[in-house]
Length: 191
Image 1 (cartoon, rainbow, N blue to C red):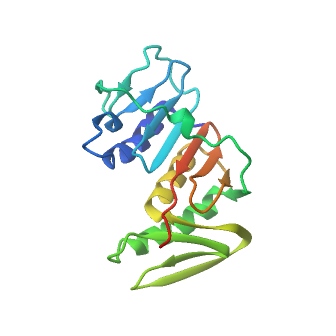
Image 2 (tube, rainbow, N blue to C red):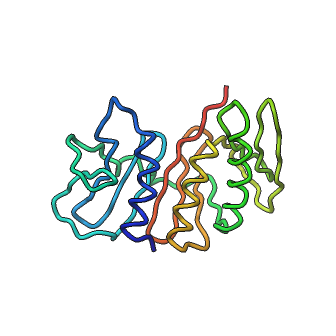
């Protein structure tokens, strides 16, 4: 289970990526029911039952109040059945994401991970890495490697051994669930 302090530490990574045009996204929403939510419009982290505030405040990672109306993130959560649901070991996924993200930092292109059939592929003009998996991805999916790596680190901080990856389509957000956490990551569109 993620703690308040651990969530806020990981939320700071998301708020750094939020647009200056939407200053409220530089904060973390503290819902009255104990949930926390943070988004940068490309990914969303939700933690359940981690605080006791009752004022619905939006606070930045250092605890200062952020003015503005936070987006209604509940409507972003998918409620229909996924096309594919995969249980993955967090340590294994961390190793894969770490390798691909680390190599991605060395290339000029945004590091992307391509989940296709039974392969997790990192592909750029400079380097290509393929890691064969026992899992068959029924829906091809292209993700920002940093967003996936950051999410896996959040699940590790929650001492989560496995997560459930729910895939709805190649253009709809994926949902990762484990412990008291939900993470949504928007896929990268293929052109």
